[in-house]
Image (cartoon, rainbow, N blue to C red; front, side, top):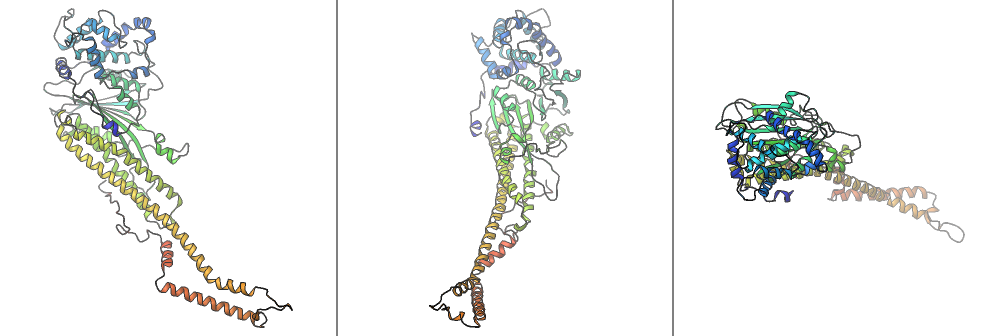
Length: 606
């Protein structure tokens, strides 16, 4: 993780960015209708799919093949430079066809002129439908053509070079939430919700919203820069086809797609062609209800992938659920097959953080997240995810405090196994949030982050507060580990004390009966003279048996007096050990008295 975080920024400021921005400003003079764009570009793919299918059957793509294709902004610039031989910054329609042909987008003659004419109509430069401009195609125009054609391939399952089954088994259902806002005006944001996955085309309204999102543009207003937040709820499964559509639309790097598919990617931050990609782990308490006695703490994990565009106008978040049985902690605990823990319900306080964030985004009067650009949403997500750690700390503190109330005499054996698991769980939680702290520090130390848009420096100020909160939670986890270790060591010391007491008791009993054993062995010897008479005088005495018991009683009395003198004159460590072992090492422990600080958590503040 540290190697990934320390890598240099990729293509931070490409030299063509200024030209792309100027060209884009010329095109975005009006809002583009996504449904019309979808019909136009998909018609091109359908029109020429027959020629592609007969001439280039060996080059038909699959979903896995397309995942390996590089559709990033850096790759688009590289393709454009390869065909811009004179370095004039433009290419001809013929060169456009040749360039697209290298990417399995093979078009016939006349299509390039039709595309250029379409884009010219969008800019409003020409009203004559038969006139084809004699201008070259710049980088931004080429980027738009490449993106729209690749998207059209992904929306025509039975046409083009990429053909797939639209009802494939790897197309789970997910929901997309779109929030469009203009920070420079006071109008409320607009929202859209549509489904993604196998049933995305069941409804005409859903299909229309889908085309509008992928092929349309941001809502345009004069003198107002729009901000769009796209949230994909993929907790029920990730639809790879729509992930590839998103990757094409926002020109994501293939490594970003791989990191999103592998939802166990550790927290990290990367730059690709000026775009920011951030991966985060989400730790959520399974239940926020207070139980008495406190139950076993169960922490569920998820992941969120954030993609922030270079222009700071679009924020894409993809929320995924991370299966518990895929973690190394599940392998360590050797959970029985078939044993499953309840997943957090949508109504739970912590798990509905995304729903609350959307509600606050739409509240009136506007919240501060609507007064900034998309980079402020990064802070909001970090802040809310870090706040989910506090209930986890409080739950562990209550559970360990519950163990602390019991004497070691009644301490259950299964609790020791739980304490061992708790120690490793806390270590794993700390291991998960340390990379998150490195990501926050990287944002704070990034000199270009504050220049990305209005309020950039204030975002750094907020992120510094998030870093302080992460540091505090790391200290809490360390303190909780110490509490669990103290309980384990206390039980171990209790067992050692019990063993010592047992050995001490056996030693006392042996010492008390040692004279009896000596006398019994002495008078049990069968020494006799030549006539067969015993040589021990007491054996011939008619009162020898009574004398034996009197002598034995006197020896026992002397031993008891000796042991009492030892105990009275300062050698009472065994007795004190016996007393402490019977009471337990934590019977008189109070906060601060046992040599360990206790984690203080205010339940009302939570």
